[in-house]
Length: 118
Image (cartoon, rainbow, N blue to C red; front, top):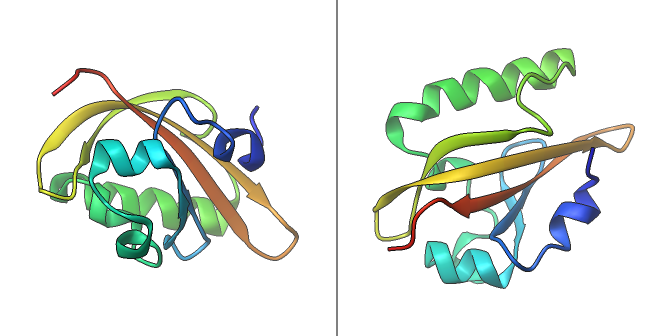
């Protein structure tokens, strides 16, 4: 199991960090390069800005379920899912999501590695 710090330290793949409300709190330069968002444009926005519309309900359901139960079903494993760039283009990617609880709130970090080059 990787820690949030382990995931956030990665430079070879896009990384995104979010708080317990699902708002983006950090990204790395690889994220900016692949997704097209600058730090100032995306920080504070909801994670759903990079999630395709047809996956958003499932995201909200899973996120809410995890926050209420603390029981992970998708953490710490490779997941093949779509993501959306700033310009609206969808792409297939391998997501790896980690979570940590500080005694009060959860923090989430994910690597999102594109599966094909544009």
